Length: 244
Image (cartoon, rainbow, N blue to C red; front, side, top):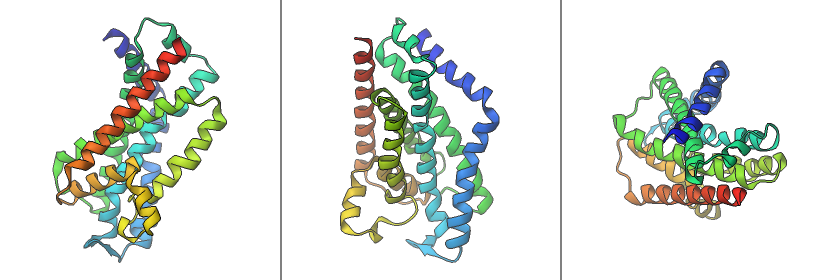
């Protein structure tokens, strides 16, 4: 537990030292999306029986949570290839799963920060969650899932170029075709089937259902939990390979 706390505490210190920039990052992109898509393009548009901004905001929660949680990958990448700080984790007595879990908790903290920011933005624009605190469950799962993916990718890539490639070819496309900004029913079949295997899709659908007070299938939670477990275990495997 001391090793876990030490790793997590380092993340909290980084957040404290970058508090201003971090807060701006929590609010800036969601505000721009809300203004451009929700207030601008979709001001007089209804989707699935609700105003477009209300429809979009849950997707924005999932998207912002993904971006903030996954962003720890870039920090780990820097600590591996520039400062070599991550080597200290590998040389410490901390077990592999502790190293991963400590970094995941840091990513989850950032993900929850973005969630609070988007909820505040939603209140400002008049979009209020319909299911109260129940929405926190998929938000947490979304943050854990993409934090685990961030650790996995950061420990897998060989350089900064590979990291940028993963973001460009996986994270960015997933941001737009995973049901964040528009209904999946409007997608061509090939993209619809592709979106169904994307973890962000299930986050968006689950958060939106709870946000709008609608029923949602349990299998969405199971898929998210499956991805989370897979990413976490593979990240632990990468830590063990790095130590060996």
